[in-house]
Image 1 (cartoon, helix red, strand yellow):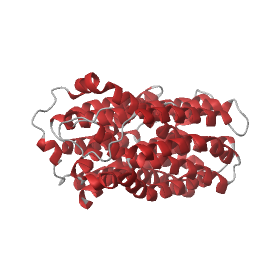
Image 2: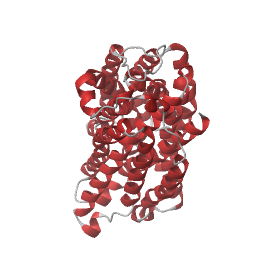
Image 3: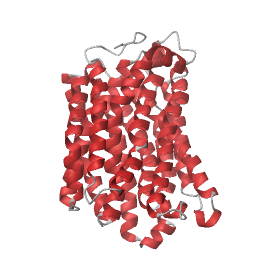
Image 4: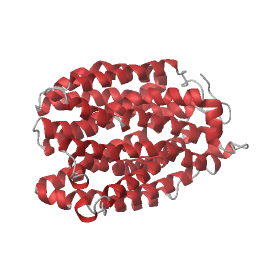
Length: 423
């Protein structure tokens, strides 16, 4: 289990590094470089629009890689998804700016971002299922939480590289070539991840299945569509909160409040490190008290904290901004540390890779794709403290809370080989 968990964590860290480095670049430099004919606001919105395309591609990646995972095994998904995401990320770093090739530049950016999302849509399902299906039932949430630490490590790596470059390069040098370096570094990270994952053995749960689904996505739509919609709605708050504090807040703080890029990145990274360290602890609580209670608690905390978080961000004072972000991320991880065990337990094994991944990534579309765009637009028409952003996030949290309330508890029930857990 430790070796398997390490391989899953490393892969998710690398793939989310690829995904997050784009989000950071979109918040800081992609608008002027690829949409120079737009106003500053429109350029930022356009850059966040290409960011959102990655989320729109993730459910499709879930369907494609989920089909592979349910038909051929979880292990091939881990290798192919990492290869696709890594290659796409390196290619983003090679795209010339609008000033060099004109409109072809943002078009290429859009296409590569789509492939990034496609690969990441398959990654989560493969990594989480391989860990969950190997783990003993009494510690399934704990072991499954390690892939959930991967996004935090990927975020810290991505922003750490950007922070180091920001501290050593001038703004002109960073805009000219420095922003490309984190994308190129993805190639070396992907190669290391592939070597680590090559020796992973296939899931024993998958090997027990005698009757594989012919078209897993069709079966999911036919027999589990209510479950997919509920899980997507339930997870949307987590995505909305996470990408508000890790992507939109960078633009808001640097452009609206005049906070330096280095200070803001440091605040966010410190909060993400704390969140990552709490992930296994929250998962252990889930193994003790159940999946649904932890999810309901985390979602309710998100709803209660959004307006205070916006108030703390609006102060422009680093310590208070850090506390606002930290409270949001602790609320977020209270539910998302549990999801890696909860979602697989909700689906029967023959369609689990497709069902769990589609529900997870549809939540990303609802909560992650639009949130930076909506938050940017709401903040533009408000004062120093954008209360509209807090109200929007509170509304999303209430929607997710209602969806979690309609989902069943699964903790006492072992992951079945063929029988579904319905609700």
